[in-house]
Image 1 (tube, rainbow, N blue to C red):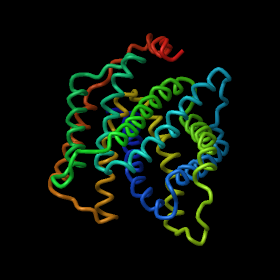
Image 2 (cartoon, rainbow, N blue to C red):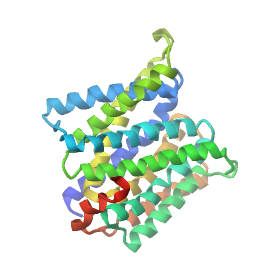
Image 3 (tube, rainbow, N blue to C red):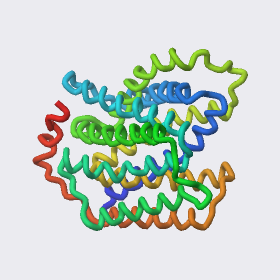
Length: 310
């Protein structure tokens, strides 16, 4: 494995570890703030962090007028629709069911990546993907938890899933012309603008400052700087270098990391089945990365401009 490729894998794995921690951070932030308020301030923090970093290190690219629609579409997919689907979906189903539904993202992305960019997973990639998903099921499902759920909640969570798939496809296109910092900065900026009407209509008045805990403020700061900033930059690098399908397989690490951190920080149980699931998910992930994706480069741009997106 070449050194540059090792760095890419490290970046994506680091993003998944940090994203896994956002589940714990969201619970802490939710002690003082409602969901939309958390998202609103999360994006507000990320804008200052991302644009400040990009301007300081001269990494902020200028968006061409004809590409504005792709940046807006990206932000509409994620954070807007993704966060709405996930936040409200999780109020109707258990976190376990939610994790299972969200974990279907890596299963769907390869189909979209093949249709739009002609990315092809090898047989070993596909086997590893299925094994990794099976490990995720072992992590999030236990004997004491059933699989029945409110259909509306499931539908909302699949809105989040489809939004994540759409986001990945748009980012894959944008990485051809823009660096990850520019993409992530404008993603947060446009997403923030989209959430302003919802915040004003649904979340005011916000809690008084004296009623907000320090831990909740720190959690929102983490969500903004790390969850909506650093993680998206690292993940965008992965999409650009590994391809949309292989990069998204790493998403299966998120519930694994969340389970481990919940055990360590929130004292949630860690039965043997969950431990085995973690090992299976990691083993499947390693198998999924053994051989490379075949991409027909000459067809990528034409494939993306399918009439569905015109």
